[in-house]
Image (cartoon, rainbow, N blue to C red; front, side, top):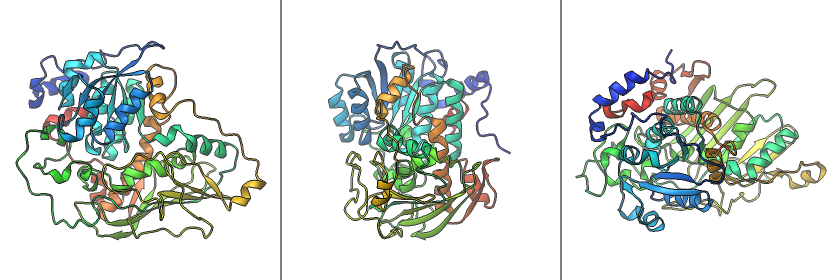
Length: 473
């Protein structure tokens, strides 16, 4: 049985790091600073933050961290630094040191920042977060946490080992939906849930694509560090169709609609119903299966086992514009969170059926949306007969919660111990989409038991040689 979280001896690791060719340009040894740069941040001090990934969503994250009033943005890193997608952040934070490779940033400035915002494509979350934690820095990582089941397992182990503040960027975990869901579970309003329907039916970037392979290689332009962009993923020649959010539709780089939206739709159900890891994921409907890009539509049936006194739960996920779920006759309009960040291209369809969920509990059925939107009881008249508990207000938004955790004042609400199993459940769902077959999972051994190809995909792609060290931090 493989142990996903077993570290190697630190001396062996450093010896290996010295032989990895690309690290030769790091004169003071980016890995030689393991745990030595942790700074104790006083209660009235600002947290110095470096941002890796400053285009598209990176603009919002950078500004949101700064807007808390307790963060100094001190360094900016992006493989396309200076290209058009990075201009908004560069303009908002002028004069800061700029890097294209995060390893160079850590080497040159590692002693000057306390935390890192990781807003890169899914496939490159892992190495940045691992290096930051190994140097005693807090990490704010956009969802999903990482690209593979194994990477997530290693991140959870590193959080526990290094005892740093870690937050995944599903903002609803610090807003009204989080506190309402917890209060309703604690009060027994939500109880004995056996079925959840979750859906995201807006158009996605890869919808309408028909590919027979990967994109043909093109000359690498001088405005991107392509080697740093690929990071731990399988080598691919440059092509612009992998950039600017298009990476999300390719199995080698993204996690599809499920990885993008599951953490905003059923995250609180996963945590407060203690769902853990599924024992089965069945792709009961796949439209346009491809070994390269995500389906045009999919329906996935997740089976979660009994947890103590809690009954088994079947969570059914629907994506695809026409692949709409069957909803209660009294569902009405979708629930729209007005604070959903806009996509970099395309649009989120909130007119016909906004992303959301239906939760079927004992005696009561609940209707919800995504992000911070709160639940409604179906039918609404039922709520009048209930003594609903008071729901506390959030003491801090998701960004302030993270920064206060860096100062030791709060605990991260979406730390890796919470967000990791959620993202691992979604990672198993992605594997079921990819192999287009039912997968049976053993939560104890953490292996897929009925499909050898699917089981191998838990590990993710073998990292390129110069990136192997990040799996051993």
